[in-house]
Each structure stands twice: as C-alpha cells, then as structure tokens.
Amino acid sequence: MKYNDTRHEFKYVLNQFQARSIESFVRKIGLQRDESQNGSYPVTSLYFDTPTLEDYYDKLAGLKYRKKLRTRVYENRFENNKNKIWLEIKEKHDMNINKTRCAISIDVLQKLLDKDVVGFSSAASSQENEFLKRFAYLYWSKGYRPHIIVRYNRKAYVDRFFSSIRLTFDSDLETCTWNNFKYNNAIMTPVQQHAVIMEIKFHTAMPWWFREIARHYGLARQAISKYTTAADIINSVNSLPR
Image (cartoon, rainbow, N blue to C red; front, side):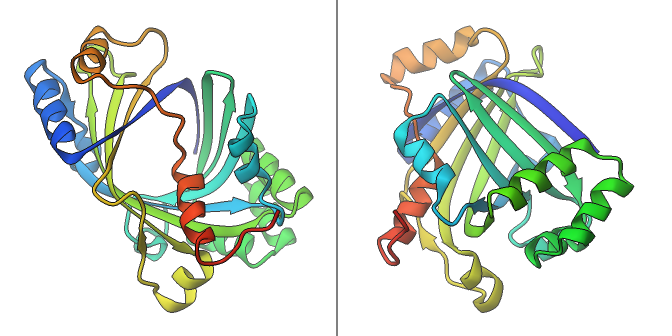
C-alpha cells in the first residue's frame, strides 16, 4: 500500500508550559485527539544517508530542494510491528513538502539493511510498486546506509471539519546510532531535553485558529529538522564526515 501527500509543514519549538496551554486551547475550539493512534504514541525512525551525509549537509546549506530517506514504525522498536513498517521518501520543494511512503514487512526491510539488492528488488517487482523501485534506485545508486535512530512521543490533533489539517506535539526526543540501537539495545541520548516540537500541517491556507495561537504566544516559525538536530548530538561524540 502506497501513500502520497503534498502539504505545508511549519515547526515551532515550545517549552512544556506553552505546549500544555496550546493543547488546552485547541481542545476548547473543537480540535480532537487523533484516535487512530490512541491519541499519544511513540514514533521511531531510522534515517539513511550517503557516506558523505549528503542529505544532512543539504539541510544545513538550506537548499530549496532536499530529501530524506527513512523507515518508520509507530512503536518503540521495529521488531514490535513486523508487518507494517513504513519506508518513506520525504522531499522539500521550497515551501512544499511531499511525502511518499509504502508499508513493508520487517523481512523486506532486512533485505535492504543486508544490502540484498536482488532480494529487495524482487520484492519491489512482485508488488509492482513504483515507489519501492524509486527508493531502491536512490538507495543503491548513491550508496545510502543506515545512519541514526530518532525516537519521540507524539500527540496529534485533527480539525473535525477539515481532516487535512493536523497539529502535532513531539516530546522526549532521543537518538543513537543505528549500530548501537541494533546490536546493543543502546541507551538513547536526549535531544533538546524538555522541549516540545509543534508542527502545523495543512494543504492550502493556514487555519485561522493557528494564526491566533502564533500571535498570542509570539511564536516564530523555525527551520528545525529532527534528523540534523539528532545528528549534531551524535557528532558531539563521533565526528561526522565532511
């Protein structure tokens, strides 16, 4: 199953008091918790990058077009949901975000991690899945490899009248290298401890109530990336290639 979505995503870094206050406000105006994931849930992402960390440095350079390749599960570990792991390509074209993703099994993911080109390509062909073929082409042609794990807890709210509008609050960010996560069940390192990253996601116009939130709290949009922020934490221990 493949999903494709193009939208705007604006991010803001809050303290915990601001986050609680804004959550209270949006509930009062009728936004509802996204119950499809039981309201609050863990998100664990494995980010891939090239040997020279092309995607990391493209973000630092602020290029108008950039991308991220990752796999994601809505659990604390990939083994906890073996049949619905999301493989994603997330692209930014100036102000527009396009996310294409496909649900795969842990067996297909393992073929990717094991550098089993034939096995992964066979899985893509058997599903007649153009997304998997594109992912495989990018991954193998540029030498992508597993880089870091980013994990956090998410609360999500949706507008009951405009289902495409989504407000999320991500907290308890933590990270580690993929090897530590895979082999050592590593203790994760906190990222921006006590901070909450709020994202408003919409397709056309920003909703009026969010403009009111930004005005009331004096919020300024920030070009923050969980991936690059976590990679900087890893870099403080192990130097990244340049």
